[in-house]
Length: 297
Image 1 (cartoon, rainbow, N blue to C red):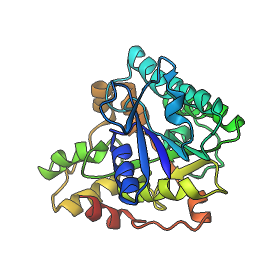
Image 2: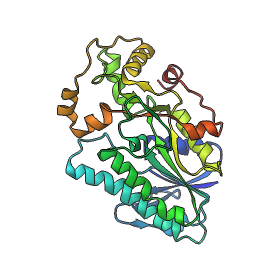
Image 3: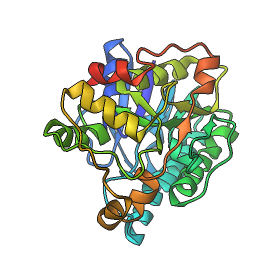
């Protein structure tokens, strides 16, 4: 296959590209800098610029580009950055795909379980309605921006990814130094659910969806067993053979330090089930947290 990938330097994009190339697929990376090799092509997602020649004739497109949700405080300026990088970027790409003479068979378009808002202890699958709050609204608009590709007859799969676990980076990578010195602690009440997936399982699910011709629309990329923050804290400490703090980090401290992101990104959660992957009989290498953590650390 010939596959175009955005967000190729990120955690997910780099892992997926490594796997695809290992099996002989040709990968073209859309980048925001001057192309430095034959496997790169320029695009400006926020500016609405993409080279159609780079897209013409590709078998598939995987769109993972976007500013990090938890990288900075959600100031008004950074909220605009998030919207420009994810919503405007998706719209730029999908309008270009819709105009192609030889369109790709499938577009895997990035999304997130933040779509569901705070589900408390209620389990949800892909049939659930969008939640409330800035993050849920952002993800909803992000998904809607892929409609031009859908209307053009391209099979579009929206990858509603949970917390991707890997020792190479992401949220787990930021937590490891804290837990390794025995300072890991429950966040807030600890009752908020965390929907997670190991990085190898995320890559395997994305690859499965590239060729699963009968699957389109939203698909939850999460493990079958979400856990509470308290359970996650306990299991991570156990996997590292380190104690965790007996007292929780109070919610007000997190809100003071991180602002609005703390409330929507850390103190509330989503109990999300990968119903469509399970119904398609997709198998997870790490269905439980106890299996996943030793595999990724």
